[in-house]
Picture 1: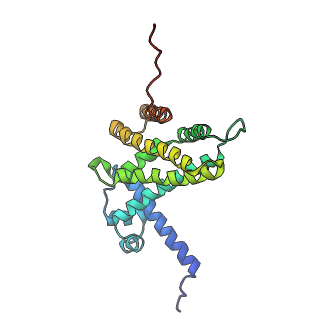
Picture 2 (picture 1 turned 60 degrees about the vertical axis):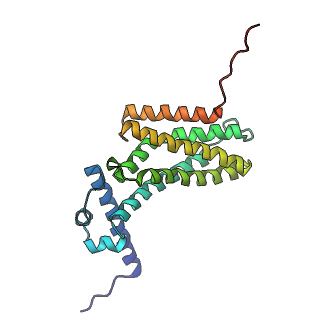
Picture 3 (picture 1 turned 180 degrees about the vertical axis):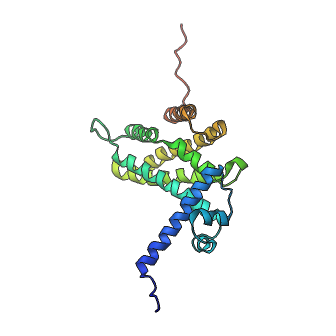
Length: 222
């Protein structure tokens, strides 16, 4: 008796499960080994699929790792957009550039970005100086910038250029903070390094808010 092929929806579900299993296995192996140090055969065994199935879904191991990173980035972007959409002025007043800046800073400070940065850094094997890491981290902030600027521009009714400048200044600043935080901490996440992240973030926000204006001084005495 000939067995009928699976229905198209069942086939699609199976493919989706296999892809998910491969990515989950890659995540687990990276955590276990501290970097993407595994072969296709090891990945296939961890995902309980064949080597051929891995290549049916991904062009290479690098493709697997980059796709796993994208999942992390997408989660960060979604979280950022949701937090921005939920935030509003507590006094119900009209939105100004200053109030929008304060609102956006509040969203940034409310996010737990240190583990996200550390996860991407680890997933790309940056302990070996992988040159892809910093561009990928910058990419998440570029995506967040585009998404958040569009969201806030529409919601606030402010000039789109003003919103783009505001959001770009903050997001580029966060990318710089991430670079320095990784250099200082090795992307280890604990109470001390989280505190250091907050310190660096506060320093960046203060610099952007001040526009690097010189500190006010008292006039000389007569």
